[in-house]
Picture 1 (cartoon, helix red, strand yellow):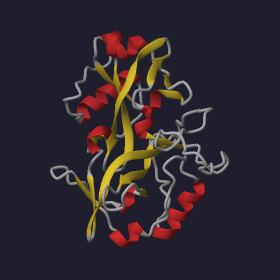
Picture 2: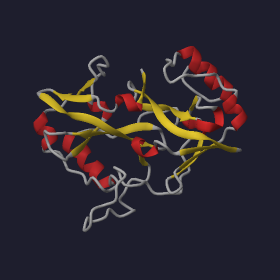
Picture 3: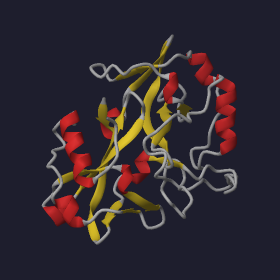
Length: 252
């Protein structure tokens, strides 16, 4: 099911023996647009601590209850490797997590795998705030250059091939396969506050330094795309029409 990332944030994570916390962010791979990690805020249970969980360790979402079950115990999560809140996730940290939980890395098929972002910039800190004084920095060589924060992208300017079209308002995530299927663009003053959907297939580059996402589609293409409301559903017919309009590949 396609769900807005903003609505998935706050979903409770339930271990086999009790609550762990709630989703505060998603980390995705910019080569495949697959969510690699869920960032979970443990709240009052492990005060001030956030943990990373692999989407494949979770069961099917219960949307009515805003919950996701996890095949873990609270003791396992509590003893898991800790990450720094003010640094990018290092490849070493990812390896520690895979080893600790005996998880396999997510390298599955994705229909975005042949359209990576040609980014020339390093990822920003994981939680968007500067490191505290005296915090040892993760070297650029050890940070994962393809791991991106969904929360960090919110508000980024969207540039078509011939000019600006708005800002990132949200992302549509498939909570079955945990792929990011569309960027929700708030067109603001350019098109009287209309919202449009843009596939990651259209993304040429993300500039973290300039907070911009550059596309390979024109403003006219965006204006003539099938209309969509943030209150509306994404049914297969609408998605097929949208992909046909832009000539985007997609699922049959």
